[in-house]
Image 1: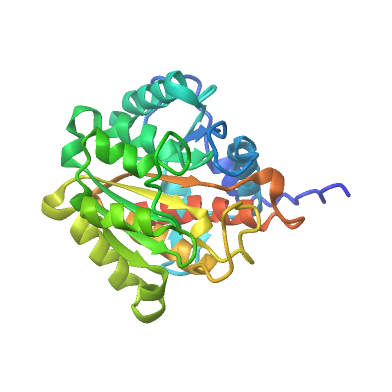
Image 2 (image 1 turned 30 degrees about the vertical axis):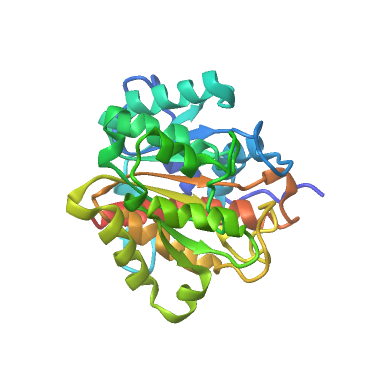
Length: 304
């Protein structure tokens, strides 16, 4: 069945129109840079995540730029779409991603990578941190530790640690029961990673969780990258995430955490990963949530 046409109202600007495509991405400047990174080639679970950046851009047409909570109008945020990195998988692809991020980051207040699978976290952080990886912090919202051996969407955190990111600078939020092995949980402890399991989000306020994570990852004012792996959410709200499971966090919790992290000036970059637009529910709920997370990040940026 064809999608119904979307109405046009000059008093109801749509977020898809706000995300500007520059004449020359190499010189564009702004507040928020969106870079599509359609990686999928090394995913442990079969995925069509390469289709997701385009789907998220299209889904933005369903939303406005006004947030009633806080009376926020995002029209003042200069959001620039830098397009997609071509063939981001493999060593050459990761090098292209890192180079694109390194070139763009000085011209924007915040970098946002839209995946693609979770492998993109490695190349995004390498591009932002450059030779100063040991001076950065990392926060992951994820059901999984991503400390596996090899190169895949299950290994970006391990690869960053081996490249020089101290485990003591890493906080993992939402780690789920029955989604990891004892071996990799032990590896997280050995690395010195701070783990905040899903169970703690049931008993502690979201604001407290976010503040605690930033206190560790951003200690001393160091820059922080935030990985938003959408499979941290309950499978009922994200059926388009191959590894999501019943009992994850709510869509609202993900949105609120994204806004809280984006408002902190220590956060220099984020990503949204593990959404397979080709496997979404008929109502597009997973992709629509990812689009809303983009807007929550912009909302957080307005509060800096």
